[in-house]
Image (cartoon, rainbow, N blue to C red; front, side, top):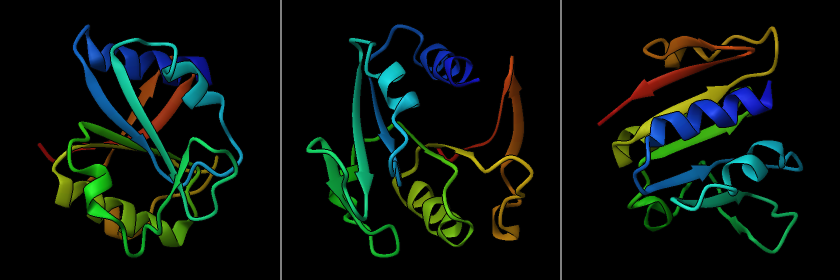
Length: 131
């Protein structure tokens, strides 16, 4: 499933350079490891409690907008339910594409009703484009 998710992101790129942010990465690096293999992707990873040197500390409830200024696509894998509206508002402010992959069986916050369910091979996630 994670390979399929990474493949979807790479198809979104379609050969162009892309600035991507993974929000609230936690301890799960499968997707970022796939995405970092692409030379034309500049990936930043953020979390409120960074667990690796290359993860930038940021509080999504009070984000540092300068970190995301040039982001084309942001995504979050299994973000806590209460953070989803903050992630949505950040993407809306930045005007980028947003992908949220909630926990299996978990619905999105009702505040994210604009997002559309996307199925790509074995991956399913919600997506919205603010551009």
